[in-house]
Image 1 (cartoon, rainbow, N blue to C red):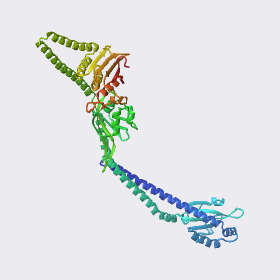
Image 2 (image 1 turned 45 degrees about the vertical axis):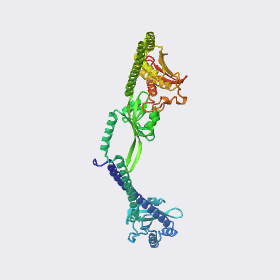
Image 3 (image 1 turned 90 degrees about the vertical axis):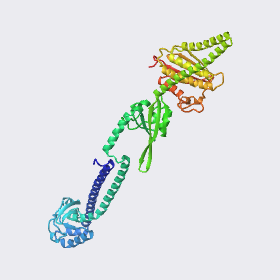
Image 4 (image 1 turned 30 degrees about the vertical axis):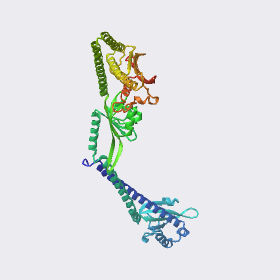
Length: 541
């Protein structure tokens, strides 16, 4: 059996089961037919015996039995009835069992062999008994006088051998039914076997067990999240990594190591809308970026197909999830360094222009104008640096804002930054502040640069009621009310020709704020106003 596939094993078991069931049904049908034949014989013999006992001719002969032998009159009568009724014998006897008639004339005058107590008590009786003619189904009834006394008894019977002959006539029909049941069972077993062979691909139980063990090992060992969703939107399979990346617990869904009878639906897991729509659609996806509450995920998805012969059926979709959060964090830090590099480049270029101007003024002999120009330029640069350094006691954040100020200046936008309170001791990490402030200021500079003059961006940072409040406003066109929620989704951008890399900044801000337990609101004055409230470490439960 171990060499047979699961389908062939089940086929053999089903054929044996069908054969056993057919044998059982056939036996039951034969026994039922036998019982029905005996019951029909009993009813027929009883009817004949009662008709004879009620005959006035028989009653009169039995009543005169004390003075006249009834045998000469009753024997021909009984023989004729036996032939007409298709019985094997009709025996008419005295109350003391003495036979007046018999199918074998030599037995006349002998004692009747069988039960007579019920007949002597005035009750009919049907039984199977072995007499002088062999085993027979017989009925015995009393011959009653007008006053109810028993004058004699009538017994009519059919030999069992004759009944067996009648039963044999029914056997072909019984065997035909049994053969039909066996044939249908075998055909059904073959069809089921072929279906199982296509589903199990010819594997045996041992091989399927090994495959399942390999499947469990693969799901638990891969570093990517794997999630399988069926066509109805239910999560059929997910591994531990997928649970971790999506922030799901074992109670949320039926994972590979759990045996929940009903898998959870996608809309019950609290997934981001964009990710839920992708998984529910079942479409093909390659390296799509989706932002959850605390992670940036790269998602690939392909339909799960089942090949059954020439037919291909879509079972659902298989998606793999890769964590890109650390890469995005490194990208954010790289962007900050790039901003500072651009700021230094811009300042170097501007400083060279101003130095050439001062040198030219000196060559023209305008010493006082050159000194005044240099002093004023130094005062403005130092004023901006002092203002930022004094206001922002976080050096990384101050460097970021100085770089953004230089970038904004290149694009004709004035950046005003102010911090009314110290950020030391708030417990908010510098990386999170860089992510929030950097992306909000970038977005504001883009918006202001696309608006009308004067173009400006305002950054205010304060600590209020155990929370760090960051407000970024701009002079741009603002965000329409109907797009207030959409701008926080990954991939959405109000800028023209937005492609790869667009629509991620505000999504990262939203993710960071949600992870820290803060709030992000969008308002409007002249342009858009983004307000972020991040709870301090002391205020976080």
